[in-house]
Amino acid sequence: MDEVPGSLGTTASLSLRLGQTIFSSASLLFMSLGVEFYSYTAFCYLVTIMGLIIPWSFTLALVDGYSILVRCPLRQPGILLIIVIGDWVLSVLTLAAACSTASVVDLLLHADGSYCPPKFCSRYQISSAMAFLSWFLSLASCLFNLWLLPSL
Amino acid sequence: MDEVPGSLGTTASLSLRLGQTIFSSASLLFMSLGVEFYSYTAFCYLVTIMGLIIPWSFTLALVDGYSILVRCPLRQPGILLIIVIGDWVLSVLTLAAACSTASVVDLLLHADGSYCPPKFCSRYQISSAMAFLSWFLSLASCLFNLWLLPSL
Image (tube, rainbow over all chains, first blue to last red; front, side, top):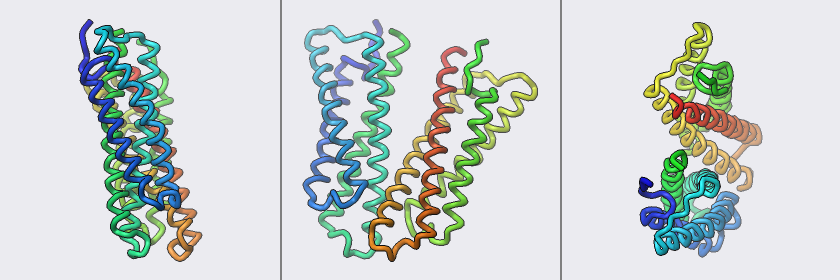
């Protein structure tokens, strides 16, 4: 069977999943270690979505690692379809969360300075950037698996 | 050739395109007839994206109408691929704009009331809702055309 780089069970896929896990965790940590995140709806939403995407990516990273170890990639159309749909839904949600956070941070920065101590604001910005990176990797996983799907 | 409902050159596609044009125009009007939209980055971004999606959807609505009239659907893989990619990029941008606008409006509503006169805020909300509807229709067009693509 021809191997699509980045599809389920390859080392490229494993690195994509690990990247998603790392960026999502970084986004979650930068956001939730700041004290005031629960007073803004957009920040709560980001924390919720990151809490969804971390176990999803981590589980799939484990599946990839197992497939690489036993040299027997998991190639069932049903499972792959579920993974593609899950990746797609999560990437849409992540994009929404990242955009909301970025626009709220931008508004807080350009309103009068009382809302946003500089230390918090830069952490919010880093968190939003990490969420964008996580979206990008999640979309890449979705597209690679979608590419593989018709050939099964 | 089997007809995919909603793909290029069908009446369903024409109605999807008209819906996109109407919702985008409504979003643009509700936002830009309010006076203060240019003082927020997210609102300027929404206006820019709506200004991109209106001519795109309107042109494709004309193409659909012409295809229906002459009963000769346009079925070239290259053109269809360009349309799918364009739809996809525009739907991502629309989603980003809608989310940014919604989160900024939410923040303005729940900050102290001095920022947002009630009349303006409800218009911003309607504008954001219209942008979400436009995103949904744009995504539907993209998926229907993507579905048709491998059969050409």
